[in-house]
Length: 281
Ligand code: AMP
Image (cartoon, rainbow, N blue to C red; front, side):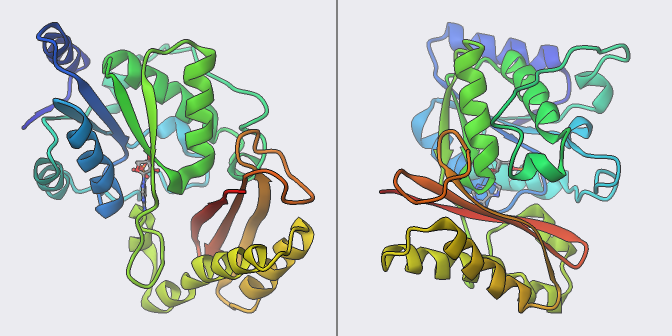
């Protein structure tokens, strides 16, 4: 498995594979890989002849007071995980390789990016759309794999690919969790032992909401109330948002009549964590 840091190296290799008639899967990441990322790479390897993983902590998707500087990095461990999961190539560019000094083009979307994480991270999805478009141009893969953990991101990328006629199939992959239910995340490393325990409230409150829906509660303000009440009982937790939205339009709904995304973002201490589930009618 090669690690390339130049755009031209990756592009040439992928083009060579394509000329040879091989299918290519692509897994974009910010590194500090865990079993969530690994599951995407394994799925890509099971469906394609070759797999490219990008590891790039993209500065344009971080807000001014976010954790860009301290975002965890471990290329050595990441390489072992990639190789073990069946990747053929890691693309690990420097910031200067990805963004020319006078770059002045970005990809922006309306609507889907406004709510949920877009509310408290207003520039985040423009950074995501821009970097993912660039990565898709660098790695002209057949399929790209994204986690349902970042459900809004997945919906946005699917729409962006449709709107901009990008010739890559987007595959969503299920959330991988710790044994106790906490969604795996590179940011879990920030949690102290007590915060780690407190963080369980995200998944626990979602489970309560799912049970309530299954028991017939369809009014979303009642459902959100259940989640909020439970989280507010946890002293280390501070809610960023709790939302129930249509799973495609991401617009808020009053009653559950179509498939919905139940999503939340909660600060545990200083660490902002997200989790969600989709309820299929
Ligand atoms: P990140 O490195 O956080 O940018 O994540 C890279 C990709 O891995 C994104 O598509 C995420 O949705 C996905 N991912 C992160 N955590 C998980 C998880 N626990 N389960 C499934 N996919 C995940």
